[in-house]
Length: 50
Image 1 (cartoon, rainbow, N blue to C red):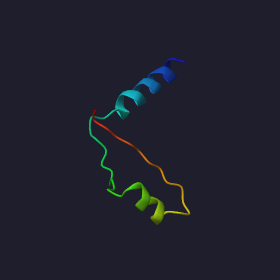
Image 2: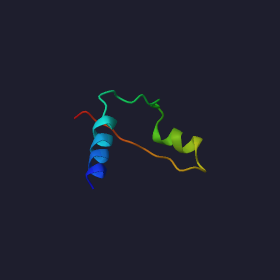
Image 3: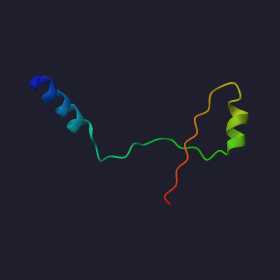
């Protein structure tokens, strides 16, 4: 049990990072995204700094 706890804590601690992930965000509008991918699932993520 102790080994499991140490392993779990070390995975959690060492997997944290202060680096921001780099993702190629797109400036397409919703309508443009639907037109390009009408036969696929579209994942939309809305972000606001407010």
